[in-house]
Image 1 (cartoon, rainbow, N blue to C red):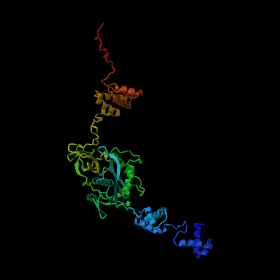
Image 2: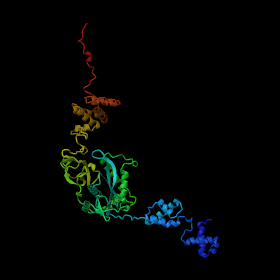
Image 3: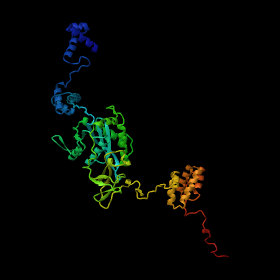
Image 4: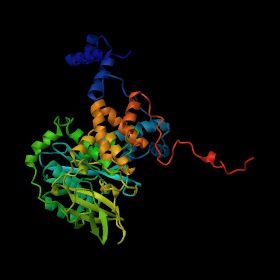
Length: 521
């Protein structure tokens, strides 16, 4: 019968007291051989409590199994080892071999497991960045194309920056770095990233060779670019987590139920909202709000240069009064708010990329969404002389719709009487536009009559009547009052009939066509 743990400890305590198996057996009430067995197990280092390990048929082959596991660095397959053991005379089953190989691999991993030191950060020291796959967004030609998310992470304050881009070329990288540094308000001592071709062009004896253009950019900003050690999660774990979190919140999936983005501008606003959310809540690791921690860290950051680095951004161009620039004798449009400013244009594949410095603008454009520094403002398919590339969305106030149709004019009051009439509501504006298009006479007099009617029956009723009159094409002298009475009676406008000046309900004279022309009797 197996002894309990308490009984075993009493047996060992009795032996330590008497140093004699017979005496200890008498004290503990057990056979002396039982005392000798537990004492021998303790002296050999074997566990004296719990189930003991029985001898196995594979024990004599364990040194060979451990040798093969060590030689393969823990990757040897159990079925291969079993076949070799059978050749050495092993008569056990493959199940026994698999258990022994699993134990040997666990022991090998325990003795050869790689350890990681936590990344040491201090204020103003490290900025890390990485790229992540973004959602598909319609391009300038309306065709869906993939985007990329530039994700940066200030190591000490845990402040995150996410910028959507079309590509990850060197000019785009420079623009994103400039925008990130101006967002955080300074330059850290080091910038850490992966070994991409825009950062590392080669490896010699395991030493990464930096891209010469990026070295010039880093020298311009007063920082040093470093790359991560391959397969080292601690050196880039912060930015990888930023990429993971940003993709989970910004890329439409079945998990987050996000709708597809209609344009690139529709993607920029959620990115700004994501930054505000993650930087405004307490970080789980640091127990600080990243935005507040960044305010403390700015005191340790280097001063930003007055102007951005433009070496890799292309050729400088000035935006003319028609919101276009000329590149290789071709005109390309730019968004509003850039008149007279300097932008940079470069060719990326079959597209022309236009970049602007938003910090140099006197007024921030509405499409900027709070971004700073160098920002890509337009992207066009390259063209030939005589075939300009004009994006209609760049001209929101142009008197022509994007499809070529004329835009509906927007009334703007120039007199007190016009302002009073337009203040009646949207129905008044619609009535004025439709009445003008229909060639209505005495419009000003009818506007004055509408104001007098509004003073009698109320502004809302008159505005609603004006809207119905505009929809029905009723611009006569008494039409407005008649429609107001019609609406006051509670009659629905579902059966609205549009007036037609070329038609009349008066009976015709067709029936009199043969009168006095036929024969008489």
